[in-house]
Image (cartoon, rainbow, N blue to C red; front, side, top):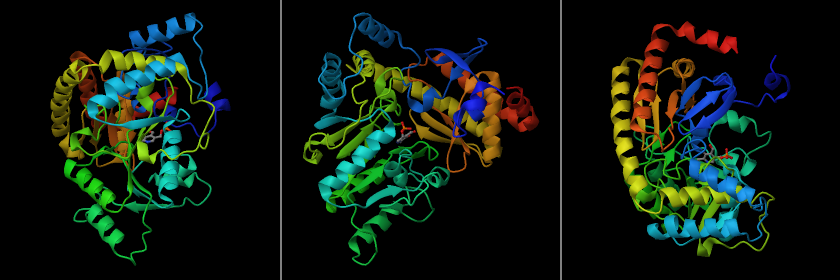
Amino acid sequence: MNIFEKIESGVRSYCRSLPVVLARGRGYHVFDEEGKSYIDFFSAAGSLNYGHNPPEAVAAVSNYLADDGIVTTLDLYSTAKREFLAAFEQSILRPRGLDYVVQFTGPTGANAVEAALKVARLKTGRSNVVAFTNGYHGVSLGALAATGNRGKRDGAGQTLNNVARIPFEGYVDGIDGLDLLERMLEDPSSGLDCPAAVIFEAIQAEGGINVASTGWLQRLERIARAHEILLIADEIQTGCGRTGTFFSFEPSGIVPDIVTVSKSIGGMGMPMALVLMARNVDVWGAGQHNGTFRGNNLAFVAARAMIDKHWRDRRFADALALKIELFDDLLIAVASKHAKHGCEARGRGMMRGLKFDDPEFATRVQAVALSLGLLIETCGPKDEVVKLLPPLIIDDAGIARGMAMLDKAITTAAAAPERTSPLQAAF
Ligand code: PLP
């Protein structure tokens, strides 16, 4: 028995379907400890939008450390934090006309969601929150209450309170969740307590790559405004360019009151999380929400390096748009070639998925892809969606090679399902 299985908790999960021991990463490739290379269409669940070890971030962090740069500072002021905030304001907030204040929380996405829900409740004096079917917001108890996934919820060990669930767009044919929400808010005996906030993902990631339309998001914003409900956009997985724009809500023109950001904001996988808030929402008293690791200066340095490199002007976003076109074309071709397995292309930008009728088939595709040298994960209510999140810095050749491997993995999984098991057994 290997050391992982011997002493690591049974809670480990990704390693069960991707049983490789990784040692190195560069750009859109990772290498296991035997030196086998894999194209990474996983990106640590969206934490590596700029690829593995982007040279500018590595250099900035290495120089910072070589110069005895301070590493951890709680919420004390630091040079690295000042430079990150200045870059974030100048290249991200200002060009988008967003006048948000920034709260640094503990470094996980769930930390940011907890803080967002708390401040919304504090601001409005209401405890209820509306979340959507198939939404995923993390697994600490407050965030978990807003998360739909039953397996994760079953791990809570207690009742999860103060969240009402409304169907996301397209959840049930013929039922519009927003019609329901509006009706229930207006009906004094619907049983729905007026919520402090509505929390949503403009593209549900873990929930199966479900895209909300522009019209749906705009209507959600109108309903929230009419009832003085705060709008929380969870951009933890969709953010930092993943869907083609820095924030996934941008194309809809809506302006959320609160935005949660984590994962790729740390530039090179450095842990960091932010809550962005409209100024009138920032009702915190000093220290009312804190946490030791809110001052990860290595993350500030790496984040600033990536903002400066990619978001100062439109060049990165324009180049990304071209890559997305190629990715779209190849994905649609693969989906139509394998339509008999119920294969359906989903998503937007570089957040894409292929849904299959049979969740086990999706699992087999993932296993064969791994043996071919392609790293992918599955998502969706039953893990029936193969999720594709290549680093945004990938080139056309990498997209084409990865998609060819995916095509081959589907063909192989369909032809000889039993071929996937020796790989798992060999580990
Ligand atoms: N919100 C969204 C949309 C996510 O995708 C995730 C994680 O995948 C989270 C919140 C929770 O982030 P973390 O796992 O870092 O706590």
